[in-house]
Image (tube, rainbow, N blue to C red; front, top):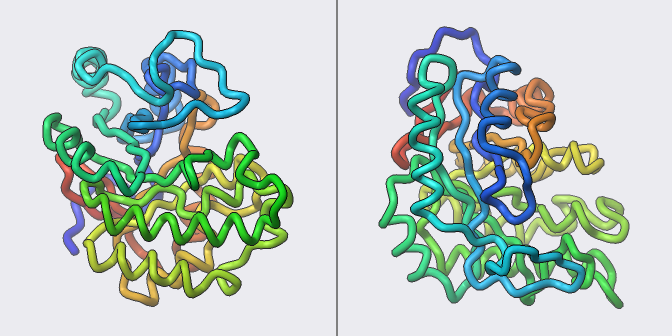
Length: 285
């Protein structure tokens, strides 16, 4: 592990998971997110707008522009972000990334996509279980949260076995944010068999695991994934931890990063990772 030297004694100074108006679920101009990062004293950000290929419309979803949900024009994306990267260069290191929605049948399409553009960082996230996004609630109808959570972890492993063109797995226990009773039916111990298989697969692939502070924002009381999952990742030999707020509005940029840094230290980590040109760089917490 090599550490790039930075003028700091530690702390998280890069938010690697931000959404803008390019994402279906955000209306925030890119500039507003960058200005918020500067105000919070960050040194770097990575814009990672949603690209969920073959995302089926969900009951209750509003689509106003006629485009498929969670899809945007990549040429327009780079045409917008590259000049802003230059404009903010003296104040903020702006990197260009993407969050792809993993599904087992999309391995080849995502490989072609991420190889066609000069991304700094690619998050791979599971947003669909049986073609249902937990956010909209239908996944939990007529079943216990525990059953849906177990299915989500099993589906995550299936996705990892089929899609490899990403750098870090986003918000591993995302599904718990939207359960009828959230964490009441969730713990690492309860799903240890399924989660361990996911973590082992990530490590064998050389992929990172994201700590996503959105869980705190959504009232879970913990980041995604739970600290017990982060500890287990470390025990199994995992070293690559990326950090993002999953912010869709300026006020959530770098959300609870001080708390996140402390959690990671308690889990045994001393460094976190940022990506530049698809290569991990490590910084002291």
